[in-house]
Length: 416
Ligand SMILES: Cc1ncc(COP(=O)(O)O)c(C=O)c1O
Image 1 (cartoon, rainbow, N blue to C red):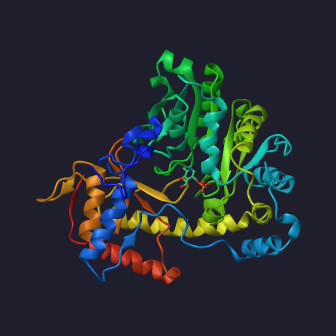
Image 2 (image 1 turned 60 degrees about the horizontal axis):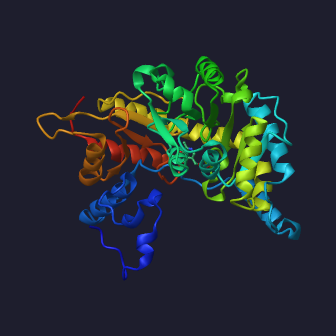
Image 3 (image 1 turned 90 degrees about the horizontal axis):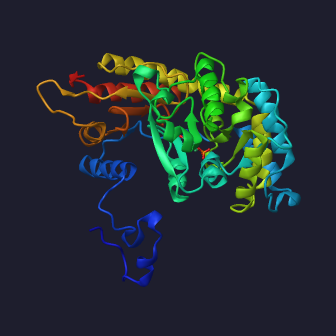
């Protein structure tokens, strides 16, 4: 049993069942990201002086653009910006509506009633189950994927039904696989395109199918567009640009990845007026709004989407090199439609050598033996995710990272 620090008190016996009850903090199971952290630590200790190549990071490697930082500095100095902002300032809502039009050609957003900010998209996703889920209701969610809405559904006594994202289905969920009972009890559908981790992008045809499915089954769609502005080869694509989408759901946008603003905590929900109103009521009971100066810097950012284009160009450059390096090594690597991840099937083993039972084992091998960090996914096939957000000291240094990656992987002949 994992030891907890300090003396046991009655507090240990009082934890809610949703956290494991009296066993909270004592479980044997170590979760994936904690395991990766520990393996990294052990590998670095075993090989002092050898740096880690970290392809496991899920956030931008650079800071926000100077113009956005300056906007924050200016706004932070204004006494009138000091207080609670509750459900957000109108300037930010107006900027979000302008942004939806400029970047996604979505021209029917009422900034008074159909937009509401969030302290990042994570809390917005966490709050949606509170808006709609009663005990016994179902949230449909895609796996592999971002689990927040599912976790909160369970906490409200709901159920989660996973829809696997399979390569043979272009990483789209198969709604036909659901039983009549599940479709009847389903209230929320979580989707995320461009998708973390698969890198898949949505098509208009798929989103039209989603609208139809949602209408037929009276389901609310929550489209997580955290990476939507980072798309390669095609224009950024919004669920709300599809006919009827606003009747069935909302889209959650984030400034985290699109503007290198992860730590700033700013995003917004946009779409169906009733769903936004419900989110507003829940939000009002959780937080008192993001700092006005951050929202104003967000206004500046949203009015300058060319910043995102510059950021996307960097990831695209890196991803293209990664695809070619991984292809050389035998992986089936394809350029993703968006986001900053490359999701590749793991090898079954090394020629005349080690076998890998699952992606977690392969990822562990890469960290321990090669000091290369990735994120494994075993939810729908065994894959590992390489992120293009690794740290480098400028553009030339990127090449050094790839050369070092090649060198460390050199000599390994994988079997797929
Ligand atoms: C798919 C997805 N959605 C949402 C988020 C949360 O982003 P934020 O809360 O920073 O807006 C992340 C962060 O990694 C993500 O990968």
